[in-house]
Amino acid sequence: MTGPAGPGAAPEVDAAAAPAVDPAEEEIARRLAARPESPAVWCADLHKRYGKRTAVAGVSFTVGRGEVVGLLGPNGAGKTSVIKMLLSLVRPDAGEVLLLGRPARDPAARARVGYLPELFRYQPWLTAAEVLALHVRLSGASVPDGERRACLAAVGLADRARDRVGGFSKGMQQRLGLAVALVARPELVVLDEPTSALDPVGRADVRDLLLELKARRVAVLLNSHLIGEVERVCDRVVILDRGRVAAAGSLSELLGQRELRLRLTGVGPAAQARLAAAGGLTRDGDESYTVALAGDRPDEVPALVEDLVRLGVRVHAVEPARISLEERLLGILRARDGGPRP
Image 1 (tube, rainbow, N blue to C red):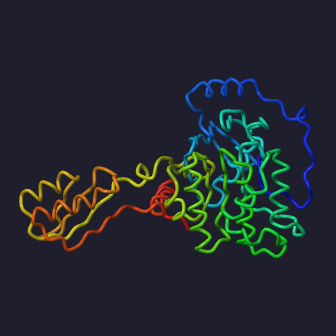
Image 2 (cartoon, rainbow, N blue to C red):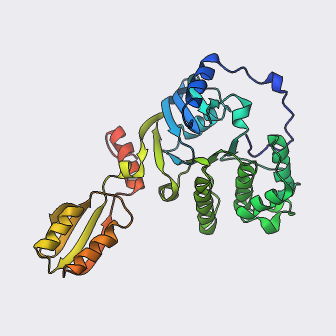
Image 3 (spheres, one colour):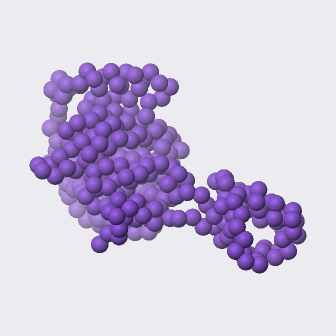
């Protein structure tokens, strides 16, 4: 597993001293590996307590290959604890975790995982290129110099490769952390608040980078409080609250149907039939219509408007509408509370 190091160099780990793999985990891994393609992340019934406090209570979910999954929830919901258990940084009290079809405690599985933690620090006397070289060495991967330079370029640090990290801003250090997480060609990338210190341009760069990883079939688990960013890039979302999965699913499943509000004149029987064919039709006045769209195709709205114009309808306004992910998240959390949170 590649990820930011602490202030000192990490000692080499003897493979023979690696923790033993549980036979039950081996059997689960064998069965999943027999499938056409095992998920990048598979966890079942994870539990974790810290003293008397329950941090995680029965969390289960998967991340498919090439899928971007967002992990959402309020502070203290258990998101970081789940991530640490997935990566064997914290041992679960109960539950099973497989990464890329192998038990999470298997070093061979973790070697194919890139990780950017929420809090990290690099040796300030090293240059960006030296930090990357150090983590390539720690990962045991073979990454040519040209590929390392390309990795720095991908996060916008091509011209700062020889600069010492001690002079980097928080945003630049976060960009470097992304490069460290990606440099060893991981098949799974786990990002814990990757854009918290970035400006809007940096956030857009990370968004583009995530879409590029998805196109390369690299799985991504993204923990972020920036709900708008999650809504833009994620295929599915897992919402945690008080250590449990409060809701999970694709954005269309969580957000429900899209609505289309139109102001139209000259609507004849044929045009009204076309509106009804697009979905549930409600007339809100002489000129106002609302259509609950049955599908989620990107060309659905332009095609409907084009057909209406062809049928002689004058289209004065078109307003797509759907509940936002933030509204959905707040609704779920308030429902579990039985009322608004403070």
